[in-house]
Length: 197
Image 1 (cartoon, one colour):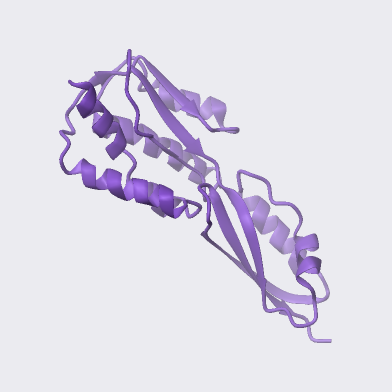
Image 2 (cartoon, rainbow, N blue to C red):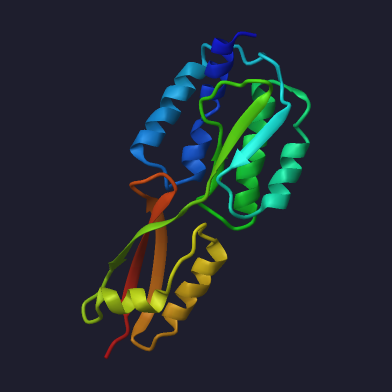
C-alpha cells in the first residue's frame, strides 16, 4: 500500500452521510465532502493497513462509549469499509444519545505507524431566528428560551421549548433546525403564535 493511496482512501471517507446527519456543516465543509465522494470512485476500497492507534478528537462527552467503540478496531488490520463503519458507529452513538447535529468524520491524513485520526464535530446552535411576533419582542422570547448548550441535546431543547410554551403570552411554539454558516453550528428557527390579548 502506498502513502498516496492511503491518503486518498482517508479523504474519501468524508462521505455524504455526515452532511445528512449534521445540518450544521458549512458550504466549505460540504464541498470537501463532495470532493471526497468523487475521489471514492477511483480508490481501491480493499487497501488494508494495521490500525495501531485510533485517535478520536473533538468530543467533550461520551468518552467511555467512544473509547469502547474504537477499542473493537484498534490493533486490527482494517480496510476502507471497516474504518468507515467505526465513523458511522460514533455518529450513530451521538444520535442515539439525543445529539441530532453531532457526528464523526475522518479527515484527509497520512497514516503513519498505523495511527488514524477521527474527528467528532459536536454541533450547537449558531443562530436563533424568531418568527411570528407582532406584540412580543424577540429579546423577550430569547430570554425565556434560555441558553442552549453545545453539544445540542434534543431533550434539553424540547424542555426549553416546553417552558417557553408555558408563558401566558404565548399560545404555541414550533421549532426547526437548519444548516448553519459554520461547521457544527445549526440555525434554530422558532415560530411563535402569540396568545390572544
